[in-house]
Image (cartoon, rainbow, N blue to C red; front, side):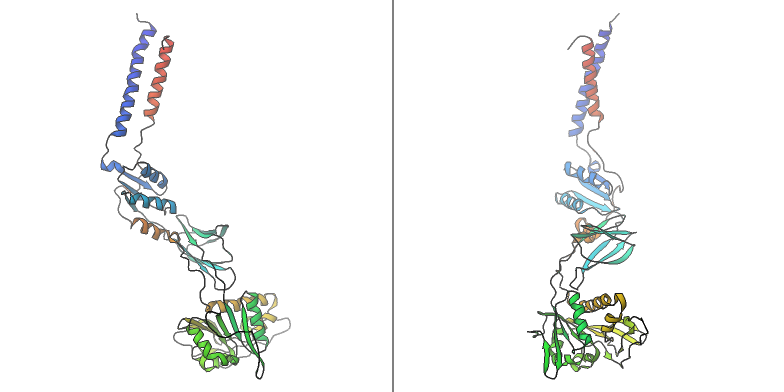
Length: 425
């Protein structure tokens, strides 16, 4: 009767055969050609990194097909472009979010900006390089912010859009033309407090002017805007018209609307003046309570920006390369002095906004970057969406199965142990 040691010999032989067979099969599988269908990598957005890694490590694959529900990151997009340039076919299909973001630098000297988001599917989280800014609702939204750091990223549930922040450049001066009265004084104070560089020419007596040195010439290389508060602007009317036509801004109010050359470019004419509201004890002034000269005969190419029951309050129009803004309000200093706790800041911000609205955009025209519109970036990089052969499958994996590693190792260990029990090496 055979001993147990002798019975182990056929088992050891079988284990050796299994080791050799598994190694031979692994060798054959690694060098055997595959058909064209097996050489197509299919991936989804969620498994995109796996699909890209497969394509990068197996250059023999013929194509990669992507079933997209979200846009790829800039790195993933660049990797897919690199694969296409090596000759691999890269196709994609699916509904990709049209989310886009834009950063618009405010024209005033402060570090403010407007972030505009369009095409959002659901709530959008806005953040810059310093952290989260706010959350916006779906659709189209605009958020006013102060200083920004780095870049701005808008993210919904499906994708992220990243926009560069245009660099601000120093503003030029604002020229104020008006009489020696409260209005001129506090308009200049408001602009100075807002960060504008203010120059002025203030007639104080017949043939006596108080003005900054070198206020002339009035041109776009020296000024962003001119504010004409009354008829004292008539002395410079011709130069102001030329300044506006070259791209400068003009804010005109009160008696200045009746100056001939300025009336020719103003968006509207002035009607009869309406006195301001009579204040009661401890009452406060708002902009609606100021003396009011309704704007009439608004030009067809002008836009009414604000209306009051008595008529148009603010109108604007383009003249050649510049902008002109007409105001129906005068004596705005009353708002600053009698407007309560918020009067000073409201008056200051209002005047700064008016000047900024007619000033030329001087932010550095840096493009937001293609990542600000991820869907456009995807189409630009990989072409339009196309039908896939098997859309939505996970990436195929032609790597050797794990059992081809486990089987020979386990068989070798069992065979060695069996021989040792028999006393052989």
